Length: 98
Image (cartoon, rainbow, N blue to C red):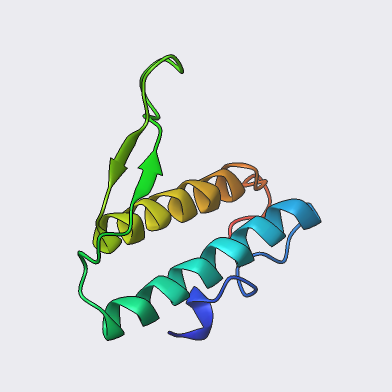
């Protein structure tokens, strides 16, 4: 991983400690998933439950037994968090465009 991809490098603005902690925790969890995927096969019969994001909350959660899907879901959540960080930046100044 390069220094630009580390969670502490791009998050130096006015973000709350909670948001930074969630970003660091999600990044660490993703790193642990990569480590497990190196050592074990993707289908180890360990269930992960998911709630549908774009469906009403009354829907039943789905349980899948795939570490690869869990990694993809973690990356999706991390990307959405970084998207929220990016949209909160002030792009009207030259400093905000960096």
